[in-house]
Length: 594
Image 1: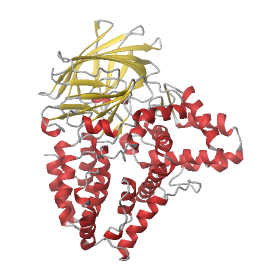
Image 2 (image 1 turned 120 degrees about the horizontal axis):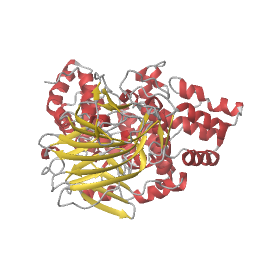
Image 3 (image 1 turned 180 degrees about the horizontal axis):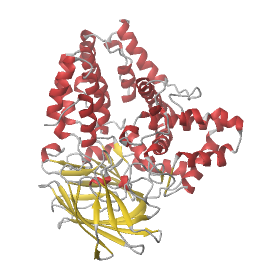
Image 4 (image 1 turned 60 degrees about the vertical axis):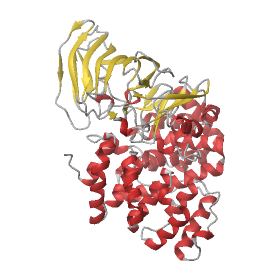
């Protein structure tokens, strides 16, 4: 590790986990994982204690090298749980822990059949990022510690288990699945899902898993995935993980995607039917280099994962779909970033790339800053040195830091050594300190434009000004991003009459595109367009992706009437959300769980 991780009790300088072997039984009735975790460790030759992270785990017994060992569980702390301290010898090689999870484990979401797309079988999935792996496995839960793993999972015989590892693609009639991950990964990339799944193959190294009722739609949507893998390799070197598959989860998944190695977890909200939202797949694929291959050592360095990934995602999209398409994504993202910074305030330290999350939930750092400010910083470097020189640097960076965890200073030192090379004029042009350690957007933030988005924006302004009627808007060939540009150009005080006219012409209220639907529903709230209220409630009761859920509840929460509506809808919807989402909305609405 390059830096101390305040979000972990582990002391890897004394004793560090190098391999994990899991054997777990999946019990849907108890909402519990139960079994054993075997940790193969290396010590410094003097260690007498192994410190692990555990949160809401029930530890039954512990053995070290086959002998019963004593252990203590420290007082739990908010966000990070307890220090599981195990007495070891300096020569200890293996620690075996018998344990079970809590039904309320924050990483685990147990879905009833009614909460799945098919409606016939239960479903389990995990979400370990940022510090939730410790709620289902006792381990050293820090991104700065990497280990290989193997696992045996016992589940109901009519369900399939998959992990962030080497997977089978067929149902095992005995309900037992074995997994192996030969490449070392940090704990937040531990992932498990169990459900009624089918698999569709694209080629020798890529495919998609989904529920049977979703598999055909998913297979169509992700058909360009093999092209994306090739494009990524052409940019920054060979794909290092063997297979790249995607698992489409039920709607309660709280994120767009999670870059679990070999098996990206993805939200069904990207199944738009026209492949317009597959930038998310490019993003999670890019993580196979930035994040999974080269990892932030602590959550203060989160931008090293996400800023690089958004930049890489954009390059993949440009290579596969063209520059105009990629520019549309970039313009929309910059608008979202500027909105985030405005909300934060001009001097807010959380708008720095390098964060200070000590004593805070690392989830606080997962904002547009890490993603989009990080991306524009890297784009600014590209503009300063030229694309070829920048690409050569990145390819070398990924190769030389493969399977390592690094911090911000390590990257900046490498940047100076390999690219800037003490060139003061170039350093000043890039403006590193302002980007990394300063608030907001520096003066040299790249400017990107899109003619296609400008046309959509101008049509929206014309409609509001009364110079253009809905039927006069030539939107026949617009894609999702143009529609988003149109909707975001509409004012929050738009009238009910104007909303009615737009809905009559474009059927926004019944749209099946989740991105368009969310932006429209925000206008529904602000304009008090009551014809859209049933669709608002239905959307929030069936979609658990925090990106959509949070802004809708925020919009309702701005008025007394809206707050009442929000609480009413949340009471119905909350049970279907992942704990990551409920934590955010609970705080927003000051909700007290009954």
